[in-house]
Length: 239
Image: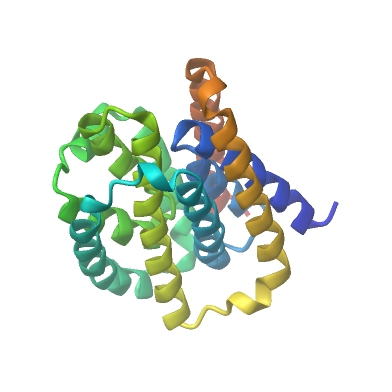
């Protein structure tokens, strides 16, 4: 099966997961992409695909977006891409899978790391860390979601606002990678399939959100993410 079909289907499925749960889809996709793509292309292609997924999910729930939180996040994001952009230029692409895999495992299973992330209550800091770190590891949605969950009582508001934040982070990521010379047009065929899959997945996930039971699905996602993250880390050292 052509890789465009495979990753288009995977983009659809991960976007459905994110549409239902509000998180998890981007991390699942970033864990799968290194199995099919060169390490240097993973983050920018993930950024385009997730921009389509998050922006469409936001539009499907536009009435629930908390726009008052946007200015602080934007300012933090600008600082974040400046700081982490320098690190990206000086970081070998070979080790990107290690950064991604380590981040996923820590975010899922390390209590201290999770607690530290949840302490970032300022949306200036959330924008800085989520957008800046996203340039290097790709999927950072849980950073904002963990705080939004504390401050908002409506699940639709949490998911819609988190989608807005992640859309900004992915736009910033795309700009940075375009600035350093990544050619998105070389991958246009693959991107079309992944974008279409993501948008349709967002629509389906939004419709299913009120019907889904989260507990078993969350455990399955965590288990699959962990296995893929371990594989990513070891793939750097195994020829």
